[in-house]
Length: 212
Image (cartoon, rainbow, N blue to C red; front, side, top):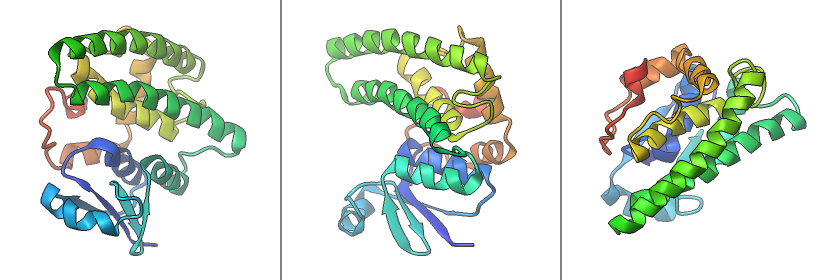
């Protein structure tokens, strides 16, 4: 088996889906966390000057969604054909569109503007999460297909930041999304990772560990 090293900062962020996917598949990996000071030296050596980076037998690869697709393929959480992968990718991309609102709020320093962004996020999330809930209802508690895929992992993982952004349980009105969350968090490898992962240096109010 190849050796794998996930390189990222000392928090969850864009590397966390990769960590969850490896953990789901019980594939050993080195979780290398770098400080801001270390990043200054490391940055010129990375493929695109960004993190996360995944080293496969020492060879670096980058771009978080590409890395997720790679690991999802390793652990059997991708699609079996082009049509299934399309179903997965549209969920992932839709969730990422919503996540952009979280990032925009996080970096906004103007409190009035942040309130506007929060209201916009809440409105957008209600539309998207209702859509997701309907899909999960048709698929037996899964978002893209009638089985677990990496799309489910992405949405449940993003749920953590969505809750922290608006200080409310955004899945509460949606029983089928609650099933998606339960299906993801019932996976032994993911549960074990969440229980034992390093403390999130961002110190969010809500940690998904509370729901295990």
